[in-house]
Length: 114
Length: 113
Image (cartoon, rainbow over all chains, first blue to last red):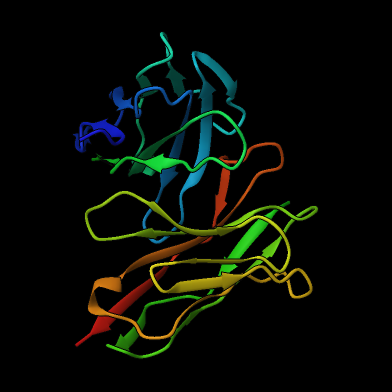
């Protein structure tokens, strides 16, 4: 399967713990995006990378959220000191450079904070 | 700011019925418009898009026309199938980013035999 891969698919954590999610984009896709989707809502854009550069992070939900893409390939999204309100589906997408290109989404990581 | 409003679901139809899912938007300028679909257990997939006013996007029997005068991009299909059961999302890009998308809340479609 050469689609966008996310790991883990499900994560249950206790409030206050840190969690990290991984996204492997389609190879050779320069752009990588993170979204959050809460129940009954559409995805909400969080941040994106072009190669290893994080070009926008102003929409990350708080300073507890951070993302990296150290070598321009896979990316990680970390949430520190999780809260119950962080429970959601976290989606990753990737696309080639250029305008008019389609973004391909992974199946997401479902986070439950108890 | 820019936004997308979709009709609330769920929409329940019998097979072969006509489908309309309404989408209206608020945006600066004339952005591209998209419909994404999320089938059960799968990731979001681009269903169709339109890049300028009066364009019609189409795919898998679905169509949507970019109407700037009514700021709408309604999704239609003439004859739905059980396999079309999914959640449908209307979306547009933030200014300056083609795939930095603003999504509507989604409309769940259930098609019964």
